[in-house]
Length: 240
Ligand code: 6PG
Image 1: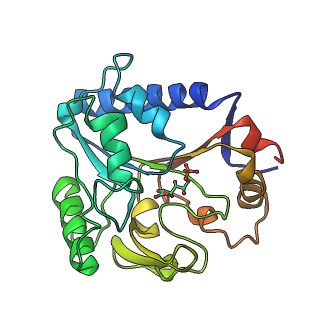
Image 2 (image 1 turned 135 degrees about the vertical axis):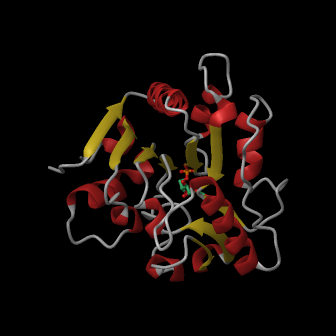
């Protein structure tokens, strides 16, 4: 059995509420300490209920001292139905006062420039020492049925990126480019949480958590000096 920190919930709503509570607590703690809380959020569908909760009246998030980043973005216009920004805007940004949101400009025709500019935004907000990686307070990840996380897909070029913090990544099976944080930045974070739901992810989740030989990208998330927790809805945990 895995030694990973895995918390299983009967449904996505209860899972999302628990993660929202943790987000609120960590953000309040940072604010009390006089610091900004720097968080990077993934797209996809699983985290939408969480983002709706964070944008609702049930949680008191000190948004004025939160810097929100994106983990990854599809290379489409920001109003496109596939856009992670559009989902975040609908679920959270249009419903709560989030003054410090950093959008990935993945619609830019020059993706290397967009990646460099985003890395500069991370550097300005997090102020790493020269030669160090930016240390995000919180990174929220999902996992696809193929074991990808962020936009780090099996067999894709960005899997091997060790220097850049943000980079374009061509995803062959989707025939499209993405912009994504890289493993060096994800693994430098203080706190990393995965949200995984749905029986279609059960086999990949078993492999990531229990097969030490796995090559699935999600298995490469190991915060060097941070804490990692898997928040799993029970149908995704059925093979654990
Ligand atoms: C994206 C996400 C991606 C997502 C997984 C899971 O842009 O799609 O950042 O990494 O977390 O694909 O997506 P679901 O939550 O929709 O299953």
